[in-house]
Amino acid sequence: MCKKLIKNECSNLLDVGCICHLADLTIKEGMKTLPVDIDQLFIDVFYYFFHSSKRKQEFCDLWRSLFTSEPTTILKHCTTRWLSLLRCVNRYLAQSDGLESYFLSCDDAETNKVQCILDKLQHPLTKPILCFLAFILPSMNRLNILFQKSSENTTCLLYSEMTRLVRLYASYLLKTGTITAAEDDLTSLNFTRDKQLDDEDLGIGNDTLVPSISFILFNHLFSFFIRDFV
Image 1 (cartoon, helix red, strand yellow):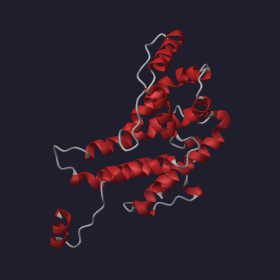
Image 2 (cartoon, helix red, strand yellow; image 1 turned 90 degrees about the vertical axis):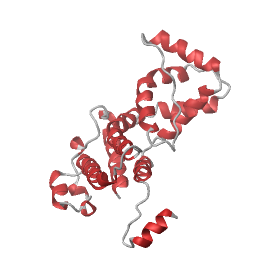
Image 3 (cartoon, one colour; image 1 turned 135 degrees about the vertical axis):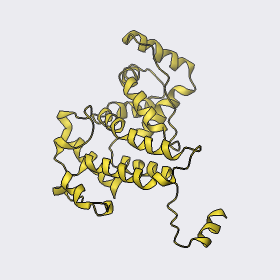
């Protein structure tokens, strides 16, 4: 009702929806291009342990036998919570070796569920993808946190912050001259292959490269960026 009344007073008003929701959907669209369903991996692992104190204790015991640090809690990933993904990515990067060891040694009646988790954990691109997400998500989270503030009006920052984020992500994929040529009209960015960075210059984070399968990884990450922008 409030929106309708405002539009009656200002017919040129453009409703762009919730910027935080749209930003989250952008990342989700990009993740659809990746060969491992990271969201589902987080969910499967969490619920495997969630209802079993025995499994949690076995995991903690195994962790202490392998590492000098104390085991940390396996986080619940909620796909509708915009800031959940990065927290889980960072936690799983820290836990991945212990989790893989646990499921490899697991003697469980639910063998199909265990094998499904293992297939994702042992996929050669799982860890590089997690590293890639750990690299790109902080900028998106910063935007979400800024516009979720209830204590101040951040509407005046919308254009500048969105422009900054698009330019940042564009710099991970496109040559500097391509971004400069677009000037202030970022909708005119040219994503043809000749305008993109070479593989070794792609902005994916220092921990993401896995040389033996790098060409496959690059193909997926190029697709991620293109899906995000288009």
